[in-house]
Figure (cartoon, rainbow, N blue to C red):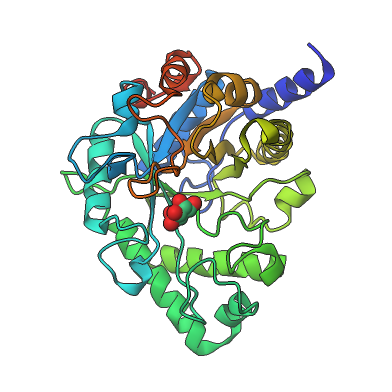
Length: 371
Ligand code: BMA
């Protein structure tokens, strides 16, 4: 064991001392799996203790590389032979009361797919690319650098924000199974805040303002009785624990320590990706181990999969030593031919993805059901 592997193993052992939940999810002293949301946390924890991780995919059953809105279809199912263990969805545009999200996915479909996924033993996670509440532009509209400050201080913007959060809270409250019981899910708002491509990014608000944004949302959710959410913090790539923790909203606000790290530029960007992924996961793992939180690779991927053996030869060697509970790949767009992150039938990376599926460390939906 070299020193790096030893360090990782030591932290993994530390992380295995138990998982703690944020406020509202499992009260102190409560049995670990007393609520559905604590049970989901315990399932994810047991995966990482078994040196396995759940595999996730964004918009998996909504559309794929060559199809859209065909009931039961999934590019993962049609390549790996199973649905992802974690379905990922985005709530952008829900805040405006639209029926479709920013990529055209009906919110009604998301609700029924969350229930279908729970019924097959899997789980679901949500991100949110909301509009800009000041300019009316999208999440990427960074033209006004005072948006977060105004959410926290300008009564009109604050009221809009609170209304948006209330709408989201109602959506989560309405995620129920056939018996009417709320389904536990993961929510990771205000993601990639260490970058500066969203209006809540690092250059557009102070760490305290960022924490204020998160806390205000959490207070709205708590006031509306949302009890089926595990909260995930997911900075973009970072080089240190300090950078990872700079905007951390607090132990009572977060259940999952995640990180988003993408591979850009294929072969040429390989070393950079490996380095960034290893550093970012090390930072997130250290922070998670200190607090008894779950660790996750909340988004990753290599757009268009230019390297045929990306899953087994690029991703796996870096991720394997870390106690990540799940890894999520971004979407296979039906209307942008190069915008896909998992193979589709007949694509060059399909064989490698089957090998990734066969690896005992990866858990798709059928196996996740048993955890
Ligand atoms: C990005 C791309 C966009 C999409 C956005 C929100 O990474 O996939 O096409 O609109 O995420 O889902």
